[in-house]
Each structure stands twice: as C-alpha cells, then as structure tokens.
Length: 169
Image 1 (cartoon, rainbow, N blue to C red):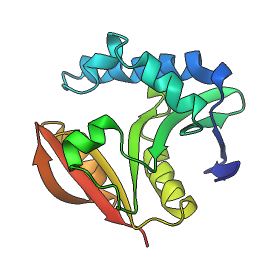
Image 2: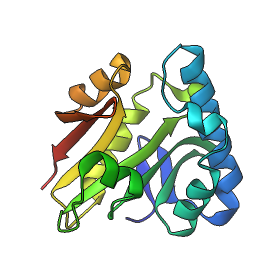
Image 3: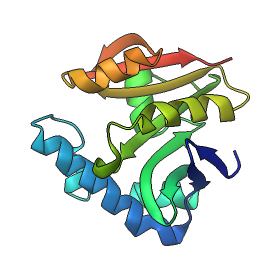
C-alpha cells in the first residue's frame, strides 16, 4: 500500500513522529463520541492504548489521511490478529483476513464521506486476503448502520461487540 489519494486527500503510513498527532486525533474522536453519549472508545481517553497505538505505528500498521499537513483521519490495519481480535473472533491463524482498527475521522471533517472513502481505499489496496473484519460496540447504532450500509455483514456478537466482515476477494 503506497502513498495514494482518497478523494483528494493523501493517504500514507504513519511514522513515529506522527504518534502524538494520531493519539490526539483518536482522543478527539473519543471525546466527540462520549459527548454524543455513545459508549465507545472511552478507554482511549484514559490513555490505556497509547503504547499499543505507538507500537502499531512503529510496525507500519497505522495510516494517516492528510489534507496538506492537517490530519483528517487515521486507521490501523492488522494482517495478524491482536489479542483483542483473538478474544473476539477466536484464533484464526490460518485466516486470510485483515482487521481494521481505530478508524477515526477528525470531527471537523465528518459527514463528508471520508469514512466510506477510507473503507473503499482499504478494500482496493489490500491484497492476499479474503475478508476485511472489524468490530464495534453493539449499542452504537449509528456506527453499526454505517458498516452495514458499506457492505459489511454482521456475523456475530461477542462481549457486547458486533463483529462485521466483508468479502473483498
């Protein structure tokens, strides 16, 4: 996956120097979600995943969507299961799946189709895989509808999280 464009925005892999900006954006998004009284990502506000986020950046798993120098969105793609994925999906060592995590859009860029464009970009730019998988809090109806409207199939519920996948072969 190389440097490309999503609707005029630049997509590139994050580097270590981007860690603070990405964590800040994720916390902004988590605060926005909390303000809407949606129970999702509260753990991000407590800093519980800062080290994991930094490690995913160092491992070239995290991407940034930029408008010039401004960060518009971020997302992480894992070709191997994280501990969270194993807990939710079970052990899928032989699976040809990619797991999407921490897709967040800067609140000032919301409602412009960027989330959908990112999902399209991911599907068009990953290879050697059959499924794109993700999860979200089951009670977050807006996010659940977003994934359903973008062709993801609800395949289960584990610990209050809906599991979605999309065949991308």
